[in-house]
Image 1 (cartoon, rainbow, N blue to C red):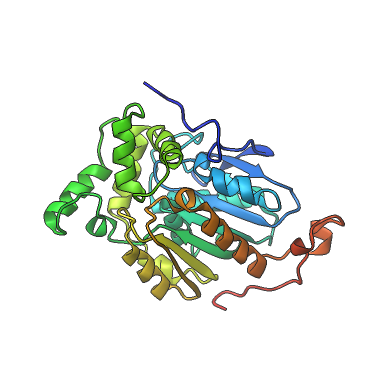
Image 2: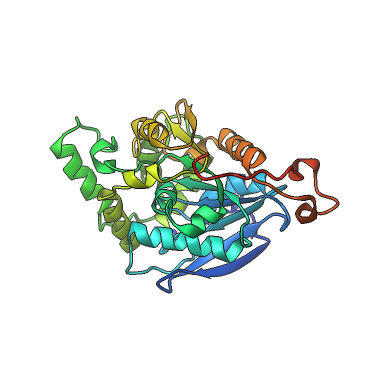
Length: 325
């Protein structure tokens, strides 16, 4: 049985971090954190989704770390972060706060990017003081705030009680995923990716997802099945952009449209034609481009922080981002 946790070559192979550290959450949970790129560059924080790991962000890290400080961490129980009995949206928010405290200076602001459960992490943390201190802007990718089970289209039958029941069973399944086989790739592609996804993309995602321990997958699946973070969306007062794939079966575009309508400071919705749930892997160029746009507009780096040799794009006039502005 293959236990390779990620691909080891190509554009989706995780780059080596500049440094690694451990953040300790409110309940003592230890989180694996990686920092990529120059220390004096504008910061971007990446929060991955259910059953994934920092390896999921390889395409973002590889491109952005040339001129950004890219911070990625493993959600508890995922990747190199040990499992914890505490699985809840409160724990997700605690963990993000711990990472921000460990990696950013007091008052330093970053673009925070959340994919799927990582986006839900951001919503859960919306009212937290440390999040509001450090979030300059947010990008929500392929995510939703509630009714995930009722609206998911992974089970190919008509919407209703039967589909909801079956979808819950899938999210909370105790079954092992086993090795990454041709059949496993086809199933994962159908459930999480667009029909045009290249084999290297499917392989990269399959390695990451199959590496997630089944107990962790089930525990967080149960959290997602009961999710209700609508109130958190209304409290997410920083400038926030939303990205979705038009063929996303896990969090269909109706979720992204609802988020865009409910956000206090919405920067609009980008719908990526033909893309599924794994938008940062399936469409790295537009996702990376949106991140860069947010950094340029909302992250400030003073000349002293950037250093004498920093690119001109890193030296910006100080711009205050006020809550609800």
